Image (cartoon, rainbow, N blue to C red):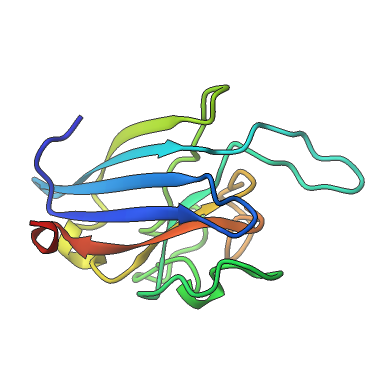
Length: 161
């Protein structure tokens, strides 16, 4: 786990999923960033059926705007805007596309990865979003990852001291 970081997002679940809590930390590295994610309270996997979409693994992205907005209603966190895509790439190659979150049976998920698509200072003021379904990395513009279930704004780590 990273012990020093440059930016962080504290992610909270929507009104439908208030048990979700997460921390996403960003550490500047040569030519990119390390991203460390730690989540709890993710809902159990459920396959899709005629009446319900799939739940889990969870789409995980950076979104464009600096606020999450309301967490209830038909479109929670719509104020966060679309996926962050500063170079106008097709979906699957957005700078804000992350690997999907795969939780354990108790709803916890941890992930550590490197990306060369941004530095922490590039994403301060953006939002981190968790979606209820996996990202297909193809469907434009959002990867068909379903309803937004958790959100948090990226802030500089210095604001936390």
